[in-house]
Amino acid sequence: MINLPKLANADISGKKVLVRMDLDVDEDFSRIDFAKDTLKYLIQNNAKIIVLGHKGRPEGSISSSLSLRYLLEPLEKTVEKKVIFVENFKTYDFSQGEVFLLENLRFDSREESNDTDFTHELASLGDFYVNEAFAVCHREHASIVGLPKVLPHAAGLRLGKEIEILSAVLENPKRPIVAVISGVKEDKMDRIASIVDKVDKVLVGGRLPLYYGDDNPNPDKLILARLLPDKEDITIHSIEVFIKEIGRAKTIIVAGVPGKYEDEGHRQGTKAVFEAVANSSAFKILGGGDAEAAITLLGLNDKFDWISVGGGAMLEFLAKGTLPGIEVLVQV
Image (cartoon, rainbow, N blue to C red):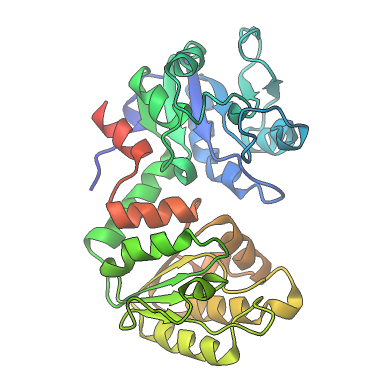
């Protein structure tokens, strides 16, 4: 088990705390709500909170469509306090107020390049750093791996629980382990390759089977779905095969959605597969924005043992047993 520095052991009373959160959200604000316990703990300990985050990939350019200003209201609902939006932290006076939200960090290209000067500019705003952004812990960015090197730090309460549960899946899983991995991006094939030796079966849906073509590199473990002619959902036969494997599982890992669930005409695969997972007696975890949105739509949230805030980060952690944003918290 990774021995993360705990927030409960930190002296944060009356201090300015930089909290890196998962803010790359649209209409689903559950990632903000997942940080509620951490934010409430900081408030109860009289800390001044400065929330950091990003949205999208503006590549160092300012874009009104990627501004974090729209998160003021959901963040205020979570902390039950007024939140002040800070467009330019370099010129802002943080003496007035208790909770602040900084503009999209990726509007400055130095965030993604993990620039030392940018790290120190951010660090100068606070006395302590908390990572509550598991979904981007696989990114070596300034606000993820830079800040813990220059500030006292701890893991957020949700992040700590995330690592505890995923570590248990790695260290003492109930078998068979079945991973249901879907998506539209070809790079997810690398995620599948990285965990295939740790699981018993991988059920591959979405557009991913197309990238394999006729070449299944591991037919004993990989079950590639067949797709409908329009490629927007998996076939009934594939649904039946997936459900059969799910029925045998003792641990189920879900990342991504089998079909275009947001279109009712292409929801059958996602609905049938996710309901089979939800009704299974296996220990089941799910990660990724699309998968989370799908189970919300289907009313299945409470059927899962754990909902990870990041699909890609979850799979990378399960493959490697750690992430850059986790390692730095422990090592520094």
